[in-house]
Image (cartoon, rainbow, N blue to C red; front, side, top):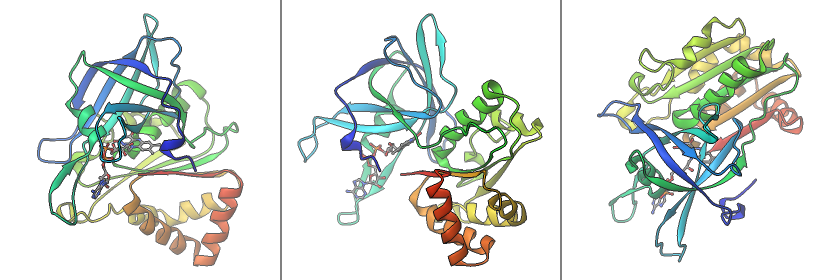
Length: 285
Ligand SMILES: Cc1cc2nc3c(=O)[nH]c(=O)nc-3n(C[C@H](O)[C@H](O)[C@H](O)COP(=O)(O)OP(=O)(O)OC[C@H]3O[C@@H](n4cnc5c(N)ncnc54)[C@H](O)[C@@H]3O)c2cc1C
């Protein structure tokens, strides 16, 4: 496991905000798609990586900079020698349990407040654990929630646009609190839906049963509804499971896999095999 404090923040790059667009409607959680351009050719970022954003911030712990990571949300492209990168950022906030005050996440608020032309400080790139298997017959179960769709969007687009001829099954389970927050899988900005034509790709969405109650998104139910296929995929040695998103959903996912496999022991053994074979990866935040 890599900790933020282990990452190199000495090497920094300037990036300019090229576009910033709110993807979710006004009365829901704010998630923005932000495109930045990096002029320095020394900064090379790939689909299976993240990068850091440094925000000048005086904290109680004496840190001069607040450092947070964001996943690459689209295939990085080049224009006039500049690298164009897209990220998805959810504006985070939390209520302090002791004094009941609302605090705004430092990094995400900073990014969501940036305007076109603003310059930000980047670090990285850093590796994400989601690697594209060399064998195109591999099966992939991708489970993302909220901004956890970001790495998988880049990943799926890269597989069908650049790697090509993928033979294994790709099943994307994606969850959001409400239908309006289903990024890239809706009528307005549904670019992932274009891969529905690919024989190997299917995407399934799940929503939160009670979006205003902070209930976890029912990704577990979406997966259990496809228990037969998931079980079949789990019986193959070339199946990978990648998970990106929020801690809250992890426990329910575990229960769903236990139900699908038939017992806790069976799932623990299979999961241990996946981990040992480097076929299990998760980024939880
Ligand atoms: C590999 C990786 C990839 C990531 N990719 C993305 C991505 O693509 N998009 C994205 O939006 N995010 C992503 N994240 C998460 C992102 O790095 C930040 O963690 C997120 O934006 C919140 O940072 P912040 O600075 O806004 O919030 P912070 O200021 O760090 O605070 C936010 C959170 O800290 C907790 N917290 C802090 N202090 C308190 C307190 N006093 N009381 C209670 N709770 C507290 C709360 O849970 C709160 O929600 C990723 C994280 C990792 C590790």
